[in-house]
Amino acid sequence: MKIIPQTNTYTSRNRRTLLLLTLMLLPIMGIWSCTPKGGNDTNAQSSPSPAGETAKIQEESAMRLWQTASDNQQVAVVPGNQTEADTYYGQLQTKLTGFKPTPFTNSSIGDMLVYYGFPALLATDLQNLEPAKLMDFAKLRDAVTNKPEFAAAYATKPLQPGEILVSRFFAPKIINVGVPPTDGVPKDGFGWRKVLRFKARDDSVARSAGLDAFYLLFNFASDKPKFPDGKDAGQIQGILIPTYPTGGKHNDIYFLVYEGLGRTNPNPGKIGFFLKATFDLASGVPLDGQYYVPRSCGQCHGTERTNQVGGKVNYLDTDHWIDRTGDDFKAVNPADVLVDGEALGYDTIRKLNAEVEKQNSAVIAGGANFALLAVQKWLELHKEGQANRHVPPMERALVNTAGDPVWSAADPTQPDEELLPLMNQYCFRCHSSVRFHVFQKKEVVKRKNITNGIIDRVTRGNMPQDRKLDEGTKDKLLKLFERLPNP
Image (tube, rainbow, N blue to C red):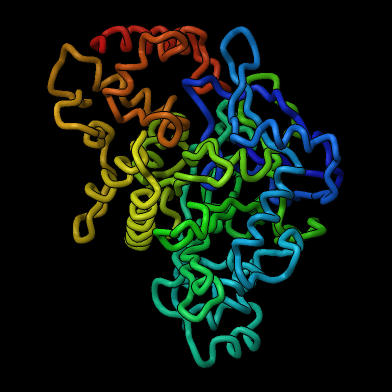
């Protein structure tokens, strides 16, 4: 999915039938998925909500996420609408005890940082400074652009190691693969991300209100296969995490959107209601599509409830990012995937994924646990003290129950060694956080022959939905899937 630059006019508030990916290949939406098309995205909003939307809010109270859009089994995403977003932020205000300003829709990134105990920390500095400076108080104090204000704010209680975690990385999931690249450059550019995690400080209002962490995700695009230092990100995504167990005080997760920080944005860093995005369909998606909190975030964060029960933070998969420099994105040097080097990159992502594992464990209560299995596998393969390395696909198979089939190169009669890398290239984009994980062989086998399952989807020729497979690739995939055992 990619974020599209917005104008200051609010349009298409209640678009209900946007074609989305097929049930086989759903989008990786939410906090770790959208890619900016340009550097100065705005999220211009209109707070008053038309009365006609009230009935639709009631109709969708169960957080229905998908609906059939056509007779060829494509599905439509229910993108939500302005009234629903207004209502959600109003409810969020009541959960964030002591948060200012009111109403919540007048707030900005800076206000949330103050709430979590990080005053005088400018959003522009968070966007522009490298992780090594942001995670080291002494270096940060010398690097911020508001030195007197910052020094005064932390004179008696300096920031401590681990209170801020930051990482920058190549983000293949957010690159447009629906249009052939031009001179090796993907349409809208190469995707890059910067994730920041703020741990609520002990004396913060957020901590006393039962909140634990605040995530920000900056999405960047570049015409060159390198991180675009100095460029403004597009829209900014956010997540709030409570302290678990919540005791019913909080939702399992809260989703936020903030406007980009570009100079042309009239409201830089202000809270937004929607992402300006497409879901990378080959056709049928308007350029002004708007996807609202919280509904359009829940689709890929594991929650279909109005109170976000079971909502998960998605893990960070360094191995997949490096994999993709060997197929569609060969212009990207594997050494550039972790923008700030292997040592700092792996160390920070290891810490982030350890927290993701704890969060996933806290909110998963029965049902599919593939997201938890995936982050646990990453942590197993990248333990502290081990050499930092890229782990190839065949070593990353996921097993839920002893005895389940496992991807393996040991049996030459099986297609695993050829098929898994291709699924990693064409399917992982969606199925690492939606429905199932492609590294679960049992789940792939189970779905290959069902109606509108894997073989049906590949036969129609799109994988993911925005990419039209050439006949050679399609035929190869079909033959490999046919060689898999039946469930």
